[in-house]
Image (tube, rainbow, N blue to C red):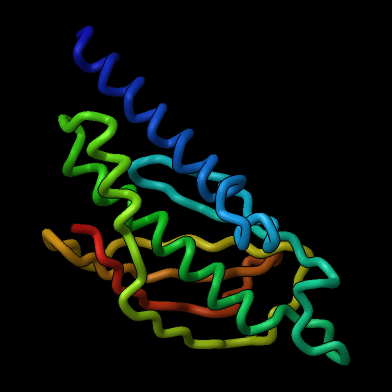
Length: 159
């Protein structure tokens, strides 16, 4: 029982570190106003609020396509990170940190489905396939009315 409790504490510590990285330590994510609203082994959600600085079409007042792709990409990276950590639960914390620092985007495809109208946006997704070196992640961005704005498929270096 003690081992299970300790493992959960280590996992929570890692999740808090990931949250801090994505919300505070990455300058671009701070610029976007990224908030990790859900972070567990099975549920990962990221939120950004609409702001004047994120508008791409000033007439329609919709979210910039680059912001959409960035949010899908960083969400995919977070999902790939958590998937990588699932397979490294018995490794030392410093080794996990080194692996996280090597994570990167190999490829990203974004399908823009609707104009980015909304007060806020939630990105989520799931791993389609995880290998020793690469993970493929499908992500979605919905607005505050739960309307699908864009979907992405990203390939991430995880090993």
